[in-house]
Image 1 (cartoon, rainbow, N blue to C red):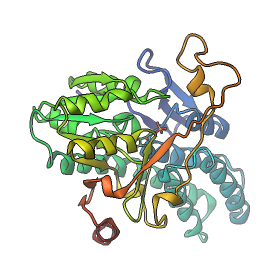
Image 2 (image 1 turned 90 degrees about the vertical axis):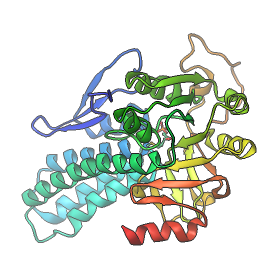
Image 3 (image 1 turned 90 degrees about the horizontal axis):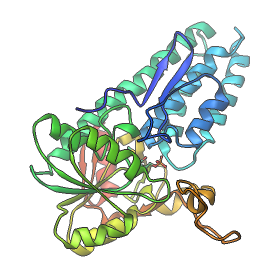
Image 4 (image 1 turned 180 degrees about the vertical axis):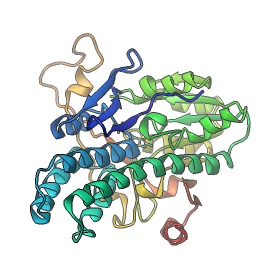
Length: 352
Ligand code: MRU
């Protein structure tokens, strides 16, 4: 069964953001109760909550909690303070568009209801952040349905990073078809890349897939080619943090290498994500800001002792961009976009 614990929740009564601390998984299931903006921003930056849709939901709840604590009845003063909090949260991570998307959607509520009282605006903000989460669950389920349409029972699927339930409010994106398939008695054989340096594949995808009773094999990132050569992979399913208008898809570092391998072995490579992750204002992958993370994540995090000499230079980009030419299809809640993406992605938004 899919995990009962929620990735992100709001405890409005106690004014707290409730998270499962993903840095502690799989060893410990620890629930965090966060109230201050500093705690919430830090939880996003440190990947206690992570995955594009989940950080969008967390930020929406976070900015609502900030709004709730603003002590003024005067609209202009409220708006000034609100925008300060929103910008503060938005700066936590630059690449996943869902963070800015959710905060922008929340800010629209404040801007378009200037004639309402501050108390009424706060109530509307509560409605909006709750809707963002509920819609996310619904979108993931629909992505799962579309994803299932390209799979057959017994397929081998390779995935990278974690685009599962832990990265969203339920089901996930890349893992949604697998969880949904399980609900319907289907069996898949999933290979999950460990995903250096933060091990989202080993710690999170492996954890949630095993919990769901899925036949799961963990591999180091450099084993994907061998696994594909063995003929064990029928399709690659990955998530995304921002998809540009031409279909270039930014996702966890290492994804583009998997796509190149898949092309070599003739394996279909699918990117799965909600339309909130498609950014038509970003023309190509070259226009996406790639987050750089601290060197310690590569040299010592997860090791008992440091594994690299002091003074060595470290390059630690958190994401890379997969060229649209390597992508078989982009699976969204509104259906599957196929090349040429410049047209098919635009058409998806028109359908929306
Ligand atoms: O750095 P992370 O763990 O937030 O990166 C997450 C990913 O790259 C996911 O694949 C992506 O956000 C899609 S989650 C449905």
